Length: 552
Image (cartoon, rainbow, N blue to C red; front, side, top):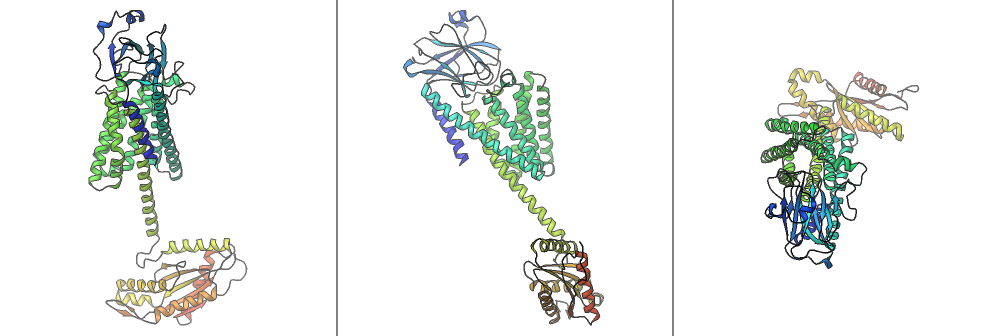
């Protein structure tokens, strides 16, 4: 549902932009005095009309732009000249009939709180008559593309509402994912969640800074409004954490070591650019930052494609979630490098694709962590199983007994155990071999398990000995169960493909006394077992209650 809301907001933005009045944008690559420009003394030096109504000031720190409408603009419509995605551009607007320019910027004292941060809005109280133009003096050299449109007041408000709804969904979604990622990182210690959370934090910082969402924060105009350094640092750190996350999530060092090394190149380049941008604002760092982003995106897309072809689940998640984001990212980076001029909604599409990619990656990461937990639990269970009988081993059954004893102490219930020994097992091994002996132990284990409840526990304690844990049972009930177990083995031979062997069990039963330790309980059951053996074997003997109070 949230994904539908994202794209619905984007469609509203696109629909609102589609009806803009046609404009002609011409560039004067110079900064002469305003009086000379307005008097038309430099009209002959204007460049030809641009193919699209956009401003991208890459040649000078300050220059002039002329905006002409294709037809006269009626002042009754409350027309506004809208400059979308201005970022660092600072604009002086000279409109027909005004005696002084109006100043506009995304950050600082010239920010206009009547409108959202999506655009700079210039009032045209007299409209535009035929032959009239709006002159813009723009400061700041940048590859950012600022789209120009002519809209009514109603259109501006409508687009502002759609923009605010869009940004709210985007930033709040990313914020929720950050909280979840960092919480999982703190709870599990899984580094992938830490990288993922850091990547999302950088994304929030980058989108909020470049989109003007932070313009009302104290000091934001100094940090984000005068230079691209801070934003470049945040963006490059985002590339670093993204690469670290994807490297760990896709397990590239093990699955695709060549791609892992290539991704490391992009990571080092982004980290170096971030470090240098802390102190220097050279244009080369702008190229390096976007270059590392493009290179890393291409490597990740190729790596996830290879893994997807191999049937790797993580690779398919990355390919599904990353494709749209990578395409938007490449398009935005190429636009910043001056290779092309994208549509006005490119920035919002990039933000939306990042949210959707993050949601899918969060789901994929959680699924991978869950699978790792399953594998670890399975390995833990296997480590507690006896390989011959597939019952618990000694460590496993002692741990089970300890847990049941804790339950007895907290819930005031009863607990008994049965210590079991297969009579004359050594002669079976000596006569038939250890293979037959192991089969005998498996058959005995199966017969005992068939007589136990789901809540009971059985484990091979060592050699031919078994320990059975009987929670909730007193000594009388435990003796009855022990007798049934004895009969189940002695009543019919242990039949295998190569042999049929008669067997019997000697059993000792003991009930846990208040305050008794596990060692004492097992020792009493063991003593009862040897009492059964001394009495002729093939029998079950109950241990007497301990004398005095035992201390754990």
